[in-house]
Image 1 (cartoon, chains in turn red, green):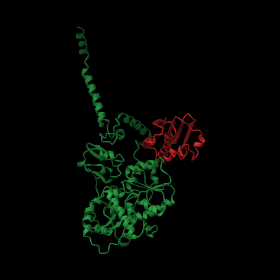
Image 2 (cartoon, chains in turn orange, blue; image 1 turned 45 degrees about the vertical axis):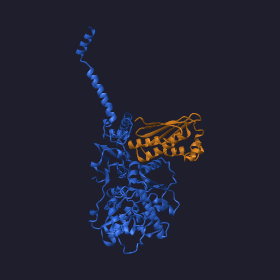
Image 3 (cartoon, helix red, strand yellow; image 1 turned 135 degrees about the horizontal axis):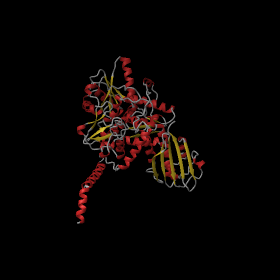
Image 4 (cartoon, chains in turn green, blue; image 1 turned 90 degrees about the vertical axis):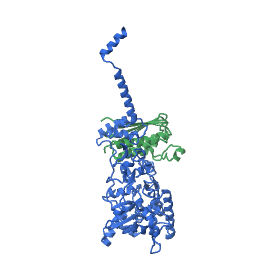
Length: 142
Length: 444
């Protein structure tokens, strides 16, 4: 069965008001499809982290979710500024977030670390000035 | 009367407005043929519809006092919140005497079990890793079962104070007096009544029934002034009476130990919090969440008589007085009596798996596609004139075969317009014979 798109949403930079909506929408869609509670939870965490990364760090982007009977694919593409050092970005506690963002309770340096923890596969392509493209796979059948 | 729920509809009073439909936190109500019907599998008995209805068409049916007192050996359990219905100057002893006069054989404070449960909870939290959610408010437990099934594992697997108390008393009366008591609960909310019929985490409730505070308050209040107590009013109630108010449970835990807790009340706020917990956007260092569906906790229960603001003040004053008289600022932490309670919930709490569109993934996918199309077609005004709370829910009803598109007045209007255009086109169309005759006359 080929993957079908179930969600596509634009995310604006610094839009904390609607940040989290894609994650909530996707969660509701998965419940309607009968996906198990544990996988819905994983997805909610992963999507929220990725979504907030776009809100906090990028100039805006979009999130797309595709599904087949076996797996869920989440793609997050943003327009710059890109990640300078990918290894560092996957290090717990490392963050480039401003003090302002940290005061809001974000930027603990756990974003991608958490995504990696809950996702079954993660692929990040990024270079400075060219934006970041994340593809995450979450398996639906254990 | 439905067997599963305590919040019911008085058909003759319902005007078919959609206030309750819009206010329902689980979107469980639809207006159909002018009446607001509750979908049983989605209803939490949270009473938000009772609060929203201006016509008092939603109500709670609890047990009748006359029937209760006719049972073999009626015992009444008083919730901590009940003391908020009186000023602190009306002693607990007097209130209990008034209840006994109504025909009960004995009266007990649920707060005693709440005190024991607090001690057990602290012990549980100190010996188990992770964060936990209180399972004392039945509405919150049902909300999690229904909408946040992945958080079920956070529910603390301990019985609620009222069940603990009822179980203990049932055993005690049997062993010590060879009596089989009928234990009733004086309930501030419909949800606790539902729990009598449908227990959570245990096969059956230890209660025989429940009566709403509003059903007997007047009788108690009116008899208070005639009550003369034989002994001086020295009897005091436990500090755990503070459980009746939001943050009560948390304040007891914190009086013993520096522990990170958070208390949130009001079902809409609780839903927001659970959403944040679900996406890991709440500090893991918070060990315990005290959550109640009613704003301000049980004192905000819809079956109470006194307004919640005064009730909150009354309970605070009473707690102050208990502290003064007992010369104790906090609850005892070590009491050997607690071993009489059987804290653990015997059965696992399971998810209410009803949100899926179909059991078969492929069919669910087709329905999802259909759903997204319907949502695009519908006007998106969320006017609720169709009887559903919003266009998205209406679209889901259509896909599930429980509504048709023309239940939407905008869709109906559009379709009528199209039909009228078609009719007019049809009327202007001439049969071929007449059409050629018309051409001929035009030429001449």
